[in-house]
Length: 318
Image (cartoon, rainbow, N blue to C red):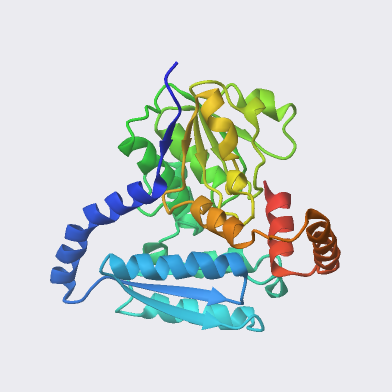
């Protein structure tokens, strides 16, 4: 059995951007300006701040004009929809992206209302009902970004999809469902798993391609993965343990001889290692344990924190 092969999503992402450079130049020549993306960020969710910062940087590096519109967490749904309609009507914005999740105060249906308001021709996330319907029919031009990145990673890595059994853990509208559709359109046999799936490790262990998209670090264990399977980790988590920076712990990969793939936008394992080194504490273990207990108690009292809200929301959706 061959050794574990780890594919680097950062490398694949750079290759994609390099390939797009010439297309961006051609579009700029035709339009007389660079392609332009408008991003709407509402509130101060920590994960969203990271995602948007990366999108702005990557867009600029690719030659795009990226306009970031920030709205406070106190903004109303009408405020958000007003920005979306302004971008819909803009002659200088070719794409629109509203960062999800929106603040809970906007209401349980706010995201769907926003997605329905975005012009389908500018909906770069592929979340509007029109673009979702086109994806179901396998004629989408704008597709959900993360699943599309996974498919591109598989293609560029020469990993066959047709005829393979693919298991997707997670059923969100943003990743799980479109991921399953894209794999189906590539002629995989697809199983969707979620929080109510019986004997989940057994179902996952039958997969040739396993995509994990549930927003819970370290969820998948060796029992979920058969030898030789390809594991696609689309999670981004900030934790102290460098072996658990993604949804799939790194430590189990080599013994099981699996191929573990990174998110095309890049995983945060290296930053987690740096974080672990910075937090190395020379004091005796007893002193550290007391500090950790205090920190745990403080965290337990902060149940309204943005990070915990995001974790609870992800747990309820998958």
